[in-house]
Image 1 (tube, rainbow, N blue to C red):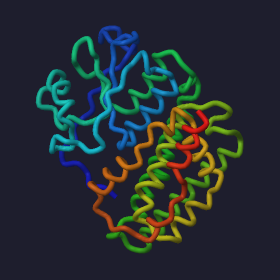
Image 2 (image 1 turned 90 degrees about the vertical axis):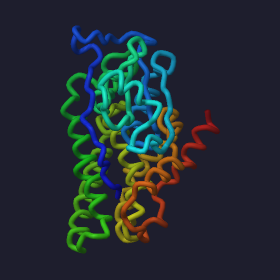
Image 3 (image 1 turned 30 degrees about the horizontal axis):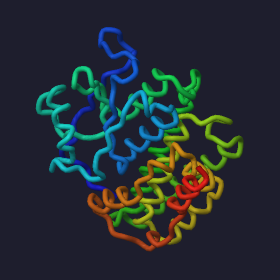
Image 4 (image 1 turned 45 degrees about the horizontal axis):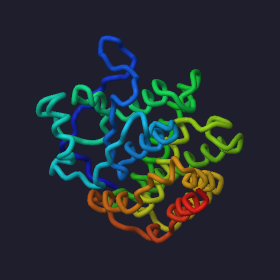
Length: 283
């Protein structure tokens, strides 16, 4: 459970290839991503970037796990923000920038993900006709996993409020469990942005929200074996596990956290580090 930032500002929302008047075309070596892997939105973008094989086309600048500008932003990003929108605060990640102009194209995570998947060559992570299904998964992750997990761990909530939130969370995981009965990935036989969204949500559930849940709640969450086997399998995929900064996620959480640690903190659901090590050792 984290404190909301008092410095929140509107997203900058340029698009690549959607509007010819913007001048943003999907050409190699023009754009750059600025990401902090402790941030769930940045982690989604990093995984997508790797799945698309854009390492030699669109470079990534990695930022520290914790913002260093004193306003929930990054000193290294301030020149980009100043050049794009004077006095825009905070200078937060993620950022997709244009190296040609030194300005920001977008800070909107969902639109950055869509433009990477749609405007650059690589596997079809955002297939035509799957827009509604991907949007449904994004809503499921936020409303039925992230939000209720946070409410279920609130120390200032009543027992009934926590129980109600946990019920929503368990129902959300049960929905995912049923979806995964039909194939290896959420939308069938191939990876899509829906899987990236869900995987990062599950990482967050186990490495952040679990710390504020009681043991019985975590046992109930862990009971969705198909969901967690899927999460562990993806952690072993080179495009996923290589970006897991477990130490950074922990430091970001403990720096921002307002809640109290509960018994569930001692019950790890997935050994994320082990899965990543398996990936490295097997090449």
